[in-house]
Amino acid sequence: MIIRTTIFGICRAEKRSLIKVARAMGISVSQIYRVREGKRPISQKFIIGAVRAFPQRRLDELFYLSPAPDGPGDPPDRCRSRGQPAH
Image (cartoon, rainbow, N blue to C red; front, top):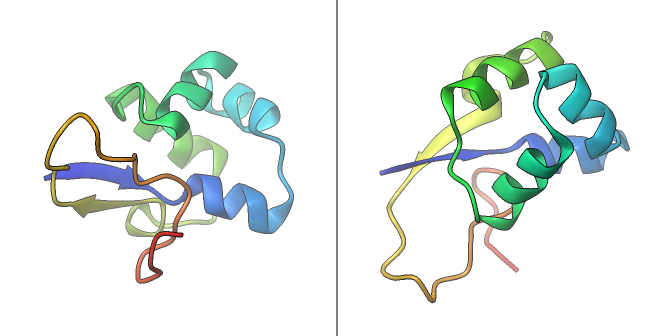
């Protein structure tokens, strides 16, 4: 199982800049983009920062578990909300 996040979809829906969200989370801008691209896993610092940046959201609204991808060629599960098929 892999921890996935819905914050990128939330940012898009709320028209929030990832740069401002990264600052509110206390992480670097490059880290938030690396997580979005699937180049970096979600860390404890990322989770704590997301809770800080989205205090009105519950943890289960920000993160969910997903089966691990089959291999390195699989596309990352970016920006989709739970229950919605990938594009």
